Amino acid sequence: MTLTANETFPTEQAPEIPSTTASESQSNDTPDVTPTTPRSPREIVRLNVGGTRYEASRNTLLRFEDSMLASLISGKWKEGEGDEEIFIDRDGRRFGYILEYLRSDRVHLPHLSARSALMEEFEYFGIDADESKILVQHDFMCLDQLKKEIMLHQAAIAEKEREVAAILESYRMAKEFSEYVKSWGLNVMMQISVQQNVDREMLRECLMSRGLKVDNYKVKEDGTVIAHLVSLGMSGHARK
Image (tube, rainbow, N blue to C red; front, side, top):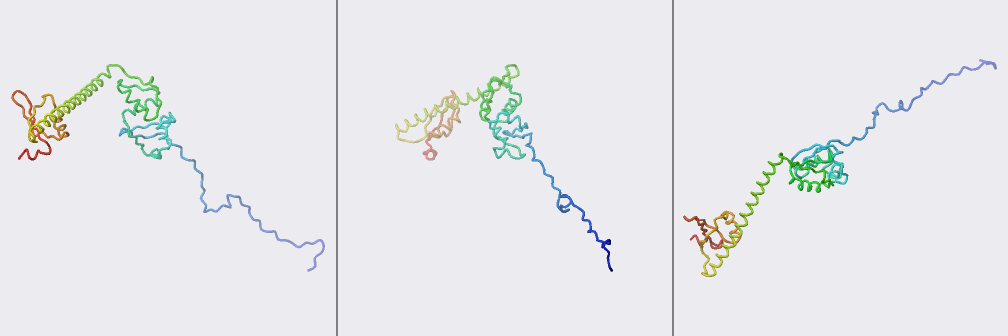
């Protein structure tokens, strides 16, 4: 077939290829991952102080930045990591006063004798507490506690006095026994009078530390206490 100059050969248009966006070109098998924000530090800290449990905010415990508590909570100590309870081997009751001071900038103690003990706790935790803000309740509410403490101190003093008397008496008896042995050249049982105000069980222990043994005590009609005393090395021979 012959074509004239005005005639053109029909052309085929190329198929239209749809354009794709970056999101459409991504494989359908690829999951859509949304970045997550890091978890914020926990605001409530659980503490176990000597068996007594407390809960306090991080801000409260971080109030004194250079304190041991701040170091503990900020993660410098391994025990402070995670959500586990933090154990501190201190007096749990006194730690309650520490928290009261951290929260309200002052603390009220039930009696004066608790002040020195609390100051020791402040020193341990590295908290520079203002002593003028540690207040003591001088009223009838603290009288019972003070009376109990007086009784405890009196009992402790009486116990020490009995111990002192037993030690002194054991030295006196050991000296007398030693002089008896030197004079007679024998190491046998000896009867020695004992002061009536001496605790006999304490005296028995003190004499054992001196190398002597009390076989038994006897009380005479006039109230005199007699100890049957032997040397520990010869106690077996004395019984035969």
